[in-house]
Structures are given as structure tokens and as C-alpha cells.
Length: 287
Image (cartoon, rainbow, N blue to C red; front, side, top):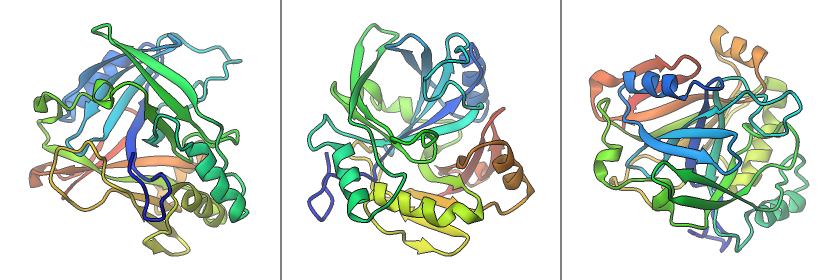
């Protein structure tokens, strides 16, 4: 696990993005992303049996998780995604096998700077069974505060080899008809009056100050995935912004603050532009 310059474990390496569709619609989601020019690889069913996924892996070592519930969760469900609306619902940073504790690292920062709403629960085990029968295991650490999933990243640290979870080999798994190479940015939306507090929480979690900060937008640069297969390029950016147009205002009116848009790096200029899954927004741009 990479370490930051100050000797701490790094907490700003993007791992994956979660896209949710309604229960029982994983095949439709796969078809929609293939129509956008992404190659989709098989995933599997999570250990609790409640959710299953398919994957879109990139040469930069990150991936998109196309997720659905295998059956509709009951209203009383405590699953963190049970009551999320379809679309981009969450994002994960790379964790570790438990030492040093990601949760302890972030909580120490939050305590040192008196930042509220940025504490994490201790790591818990999770897993998934692949379609080929191989069982994957990992540790998850998530924000402690109710409602913080999707606002702040959760952390996923592998107990089994990461290449089992993220199949970057053969290389053809990450070769997409739309020439996508990796994630350019993740855009979060928040109301103007909560932007400052939200930015402080993210700075605490990431462990570095933003590279850009105005009253309307705050931007951080993320570290490259250690498992990347591509050459060095502009770092992935995490963008926190107030709404800039009617579409963004409407999005924020109907959902909690958090993830709104995914930016993807493409090689083909003709693939630049804005596209939509039935539930999410994707912006493709040249490196």
C-alpha cells in the first residue's frame, strides 16, 4: 500500500465507482454501457447474496462497478445502498489489509483538526464469489455518519490478490471500443451553504489540501493506482461544486449531496462529449 510523504498510509487513490440500477436489471445495465462503447467483464455475487455486479476495468487500474440488488430490499434494510436512487451512488478509494488502519488514520486527522462528519468505522470483512467460483475477500471501512455514503469515499482493501477483483489481464479486458483509458474526474454536487464544511471533510479524508479552491468549486488531485497499465497522464481529479445549471440544480433537489458525474479519458477525439446511461452522466474527454 503506498505511503504519503508524511509517512501516513495514502488515502487518495481512487479504486472504483459504483453505478446502481433497479433490482433485477443488471443485464440491461450491461447492455446500456456496451452501447456507450465500454467493454463489460463478468463480476459475481456478493457474500450476502443481496447484490451482484459486472465490471468495466480501465488501464489506469480503476473500474466501474455495475451493481443491482438481486431482489428488492425491504424498507427496513440497513444495507448502505438499499435506499439509493439509481445512478452513480458511491465511490471507493483503495484500502489495505488492515495495517495501518485506514479508519484510525482518518479519525486521527479529524480529531486533530476538529472536523465533524469525517470519522470512519473500523474495517469489516466483505467478499464476492466470481462467476468462475473464485472467492474474493476484502476489508471495507466506511464513513461513520448516517447518510455519508456517496458523499465521502468508502475504502476497499484486498485480502486476496487485487487482480482477482480487478481483472486487468488479459489486457483486452481493458480495451474499449470507445477508446476509454481511465477516469478523468469524479464530480460531486453540494448546496452552496454546505460546500465549505463538505470540503473540510474531504480534505480530512484525502489527507491533502485542494489544488483549487473557490467559493463555488474545490478540486483535489488523486494518486495513480499502483496497478495501472497505462503511461503517466494528468492525475484524476475529485471535483466538489455547487450546481452550475438547471440540470445540476434539479439533480440536487431530488438527491442528497454527493456524486453526480463521471469523467472518462478517451484517445479518440470523435468520442469526446456527454453521454448518459439511463441513470447516470458520463463526460468523455481527451487526455
